[in-house]
Length: 104
Image (cartoon, rainbow, N blue to C red):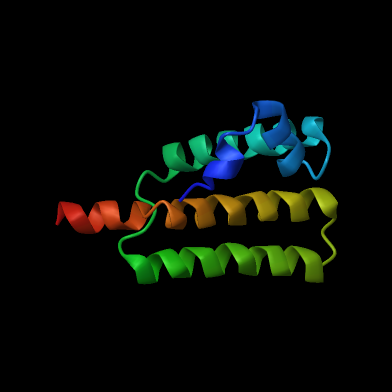
């Protein structure tokens, strides 16, 4: 699941890639997502019970982003919904929904 070529780059180069050329922005993105993942796992330890519920979680978060844009709720709200969408996508990518299925 990891691009080895990127993983072997020095950290600052990785952050430049993440930050579209700006390592400071890369660190901001990285640590913002880490914190959002930590918070989401604390608030919702069970991400989803199966892949279809995981897809529902993704759809719901992206739907909230669409609403924020359509209702012109502003860039801060839009970014918050983007972060939430990224978090559910990461949790699905990491197969966190399969953990529950495996416990059954």
